[in-house]
Image (cartoon, rainbow, N blue to C red; front, side):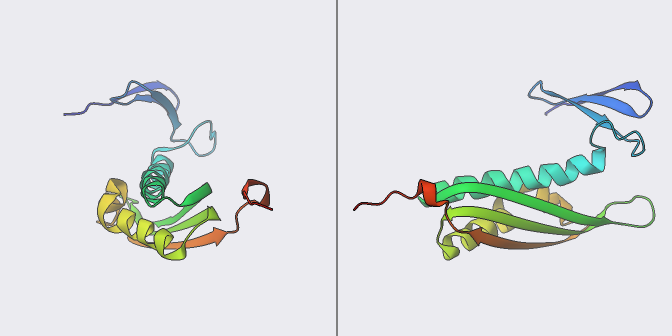
Length: 144
């Protein structure tokens, strides 16, 4: 079993240490806003989880990915518990990428690999979309 610890450090601030030993400061008070809050961390975890999948899958497909940005947006329930009820994920990819390969990588993450998304789908509708931006001309290698 994996174990995480959360220690109160004053006000509504906490230091969370995960099984890896890395620590993250969190702040539940949105007015002081000194660190991400717990539900904000869930959005960040969703983005990082699916990003990991997509990068790995595209590398295996030998796609020339230059950059990836994932923007996760969401709405929460009005009454407690204020769980995520609607999530939208936008993938912005840059590189020499095949549209079908990108779509397949995202679908695999959505349907099979992203554990965070699998948990969030229990309370939220999750929609996905992507934009493929052209490769940076300075990175394209050509021959004269």
